[in-house]
Amino acid sequence: MNIYRKCSVILLTTFSVAIASANAQVNNNGQFRLNPLEIKALKNAGSNAPGSSNYSAVQEIVVMGDPSKPGVYMILLKIAANTKIAAHLHPDQRVATVLSGTWYFGYGAQFDESKLKRLPAGSIYSEVAGQNHFAMTKEPVIVEITGYGPSGVNYVDPADDPSGKK
Image (cartoon, rainbow, N blue to C red; front, side):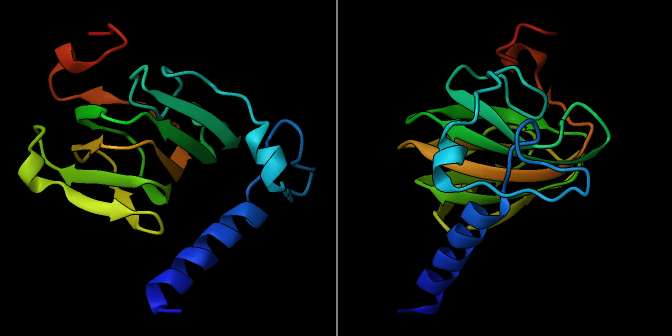
């Protein structure tokens, strides 16, 4: 097994063991744990949830914490195939792991396909606080994002915000 495959297996195993639902599994000491069936049962927070891109093709599932409040949070983004997300930023520092599919991710103030980097499952990347970035998919993708809230989203061009907030 090559090193990249081992890392992917470790990341996915760690994710499956470590994440949990704030509503059902976190105790007073901050301890939590969910198995894969419990992860699948988590509810979709919708496309306009804090920390998401507001695209209807992006479902956000809050795994831990509350992205709209100060503190650590973890979300899953399920992104449909053939989705292009315009340049935007988040006010909080975030790190992410691609759990399934291939995510194409780039930094900059406008969507530029030539600046996208191919990130297959097992890849990690950062979303720097206040730094513009953009992304796209060719197949369904699941990304896990951990940040320190409060989170939100601001588009470089407000007309690109699919929520209609300008």
